[in-house]
Length: 368
Ligand SMILES: *Cc1c(COP(=O)(O)O)cnc(C)c1O
Image (cartoon, rainbow, N blue to C red; front, side, top):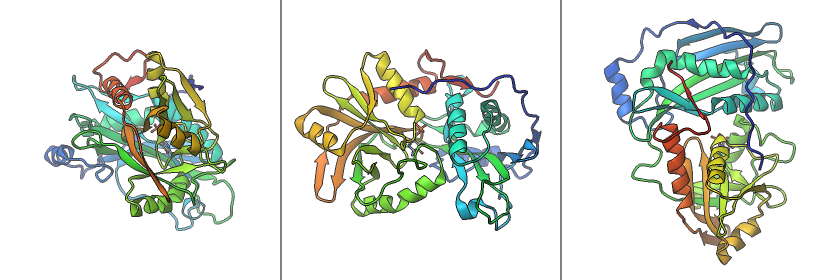
């Protein structure tokens, strides 16, 4: 499969950020209490990045300001037509205290692809990376140092123009907020159960499936509730030809008994950077990797015949999650659990946390 190539724009002068310190920032003691048990997505750091864009003015007014509510007009286009995109990327604290992030050029380029599809302005990759650095410069102390902990960075962009006409907004804002994240799996990685969504899809041909946009998540919430009703943790979606796409927010990978690794490829799947990295590590180990259509029939028959020896999901939040059960309206298939998913997970997290050589040059130090 084609691995995402790297080509950040160069030659742009950095932005000059205005920094307004949060006078009500948490005390070190309050922060430490949060970092001792951060959970996921409930606590936020003291500051956020905010950059404006307009048709006439381009990117302007870059600033770091106290974290807090965003004032906007009730007619802001995002509230009506959902013109919004986002990213998800982590900052990791290494044993020597330094702070690093993982392949930010890839997230920057994906934000640009998402922007193109949602008719939003493309933030230069160098500005994207600078925005992460600027936030870490003021909130670096929020990067936790415990096992499997990280600071989850959430860049996002939306249509802020007050206008109820339907067209791409002329005023847009880009933000970065950050939330400390604890170990995703407490007490070791647990296989998850997956509900096969037969009535709903998350994306369609020519739609927005490959863009990281809120609307795709909105479309996945009802099938996700159906998964919970059926005692499953997550949903897997099919396309109109009954080929496997992905989970609501993670890509899926199949391991065959001859060592081949196969992942669904289509225009409506979001190209995960975790998946790309895991596949690269598997290639390095000598595995043959294929990106192609995988039908639900191939999955079920492959597991039944013993041809498929492992199935797992991957994404930035949980990194790698083995799939233990696939459940549909009239079947329940136990999934074979192998060693490869966890061994690739360990290799990847070792690189991210600086415990193993970064031979692909994937890490970027943020606090220098
Ligand atoms: C973000 C996301 C993924 C995983 O992408 P990573 O870059 O690995 O975090 C997979 N599927 C969807 C729908 C996503 O939004």
